[in-house]
Length: 162
Image 1: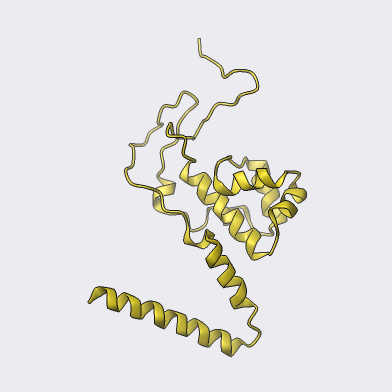
Image 2: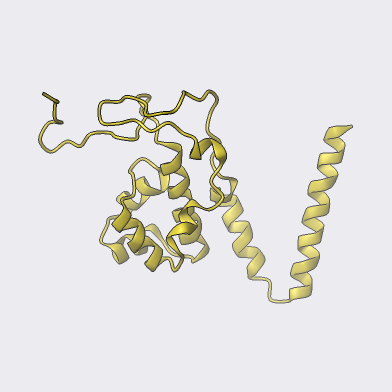
């Protein structure tokens, strides 16, 4: 006979025994945060739109809570993106992350070593930079700033290689 979780408690399917969030959940949450921030929407406003508290939105964005299919669909409508947006640009390490069943057994994947690097697009600094960039009204100024940024980044790579 199979043991069932205690009443009111859910099994932790998909969550590694380490207590760390599943990298796929972290990626999906970071994409929610990216889109919400690019729209200039607060966690509170997003929560109101889908019937959650801002604390629940925070947990989704950190990957601490897994987003179910119906909630993901609601998020896609409120954030005006296709559901596939939340899985775009997923690092190979996240896509290959082991999935635990309800008993905590790893299903079909060997353990991966090394830490998971969060998406740099989810960093507040990146989001603020992108929003400031798009507030520049003159397209030629935006283009020059873009070219300058690429040149500075490339010069840093050349110096590091020397």
